[in-house]
Every structure is written in C-alpha cells, then in structure tokens.
Length: 372
Image (cartoon, rainbow, N blue to C red; front, side, top):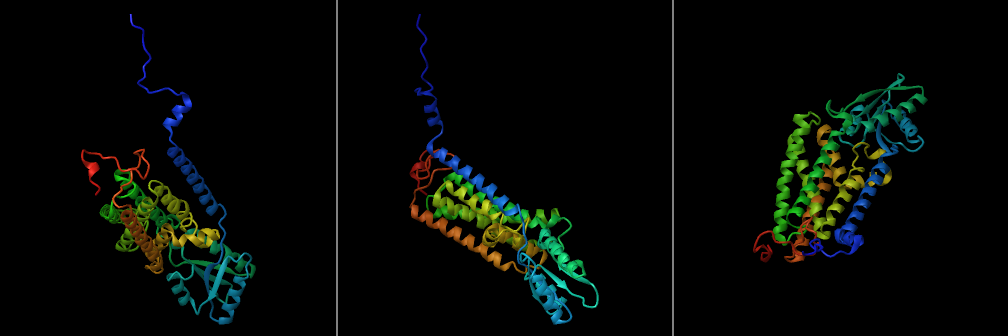
C-alpha cells in the first residue's frame, strides 16, 4: 500500500515570514505607508483648518451722510483687537451695495447720525458663517458706543441652500468625479498612456465626461433640489471646467508618477484643496496658510465662482475661472508631454501588480505587439 505523500501544490514552504514576503511585496508595503501618510495629512489638514476659525481682515464698507462720521467709524472698527475687520469708507449706501454685489467687500455698515440704530448689510449667499461673524463683531462694536444695528441681507442664500454650503458641496462632487474618472482610465488601460494619440483620447474622454457631469450636477443642485439659483448654462460651464481641470491634473500626475499620481491628486485636491476652499468657513475665517492657498486650488476657485454665479450675477467669477482654466491647460499639456517622452512605453494598469515602468499586460492575443 502506497504511503501518502505531502502535496507541494501550494509551492515551496519557507515559513510564515516567507509567506508574508510573498503576499506583501515591497512596493505594496510602500503604497500602504503612502496611504497612511495621506490619511494623517487628511486629518491634520481638516482639523487644522476648521478647529479654531478666527475672523481676520474681513473687508467691510462704511458709509454715512457726513464723510467725517464714516471715517471715524471706520477707524474705530479698524482698531478692534485682532484686526477682524478691514474697513473702507464709501460715498453712500448705494456705493456700498455695489461693492457687495461686486464682491469687493463682504458687508457694509450704514451709519445714521440722527439716531442710534445703524444698518449692517450682509450677504449670506457668500457663506452664513462669514455673515454671522460680521454681525457679531460689528454688533459688539456698536454696542460699546451705545448703538445697535439692524441686519439687512442683500444677497441671501436660497431657501434650499443651508448655510450657503451647496456651492461648496457641488464643487466637491465635481472634483471627486474628475479625479475618479482619470483614475478609472488608469485602471482600465495603464497609469501612463502609450503615446500622444492615447493621451489625446484620454483627454477627450475626460472632456466628454466633464460636460455630462457638469450638466447633471447643475441640474440636481438647481432645478431638482432648488439649492442654487443662477444661470444653469453658467454653472454648467463652471462644472465642466472644474471636472476637466481636476481630471487633467490627475492624468498629468499619473503621467509623471504612475499609480502614485492618483495619491498625489488626492493630496492636492482633497487634503489641501477642500479645507482651504472657503466652504464651511470662507477665506477671512481660515488660518493664514489655508486662506492663502485656497484661491489657487480647484476646490477654492470653483466654490468662489459658483457662489458668484448663484448670488452675485457672476461678479468676481472671472479670476477663479482663469485659475481653473490654468490648471486644465497645465494638466493637459503635462499629460501630452509625458506621453510623448515615454515614446510608446505604456504603464502597467492599476491593480496588475506590475511596476509602473513595466509594459502593460496584453488582454487579447496579439495585443502586446501593438504599441498604440
């Protein structure tokens, strides 16, 4: 009777450590460490930006029938401890309203020398937390002078726009769609395109996706939910630009760093971009670092432009849209340049287990001979 023999189908045995080394490659371990670093950066950035909002240099107009009265009030507000306000005098209330609508200031104090009640013009459409901060600061300053203020919201948030956050959430959704679309292109056909033609195809697919995503996001936020007023066409154009810009950045970073580029895109857009976007707390309430980088990143530029289109007749949206266009052009240019530089060497698809510089695994017979 034959003796049973030990099966070797599972491969050579080298102990538990050998199994660990075989199951978890050095590359996988490094990627996991990268995810940990990204997670900690996410926690640090969000808590760092939001844990202690403090108003600083909020632009506010001051108007009164007599110029000396307006000047004196502005000087008093400018001398408040901590510099929460950056007051500037204007001719009259009409001029103050124009400044608010143009997004040159966030509020305006209209002095009435004949009485003890002044009016404070705010714009909650630019963010409820910002208008509330101004109300509190000016209210206390007026109270110290034996005066009171009556609040007038000249650009109120829509009934369905709780605390003026809908623009921020809409832009965040567009940003998520942009980098996920670019990441899926990497998953399906290699992190790096094989040549310039493939890069153009990816950018074209991204543009088509951006057009659809921009429209559907606008329709949901506007006509369906009634969260954002304003022109559907204008918001659609903004959404298309946001999605394409973020997607192009992600494609560019993948072209430069392979699979790691997806993590770099998340670092730029999510870790740095979202906390500094001025969503929950507009720029004057954020710490200096976050308020400085916010306008230059896609989430911040998109949020500011969306609020401008929804509540301020598009005033102030030009600069942020130029920022988004700059990211879109830069991302597309780097994507094409990386494809040309690689000269027909496609990167391995995400999840293939191959290094980024390894050729893509053919999915069909004969595919490996085609470097298109």
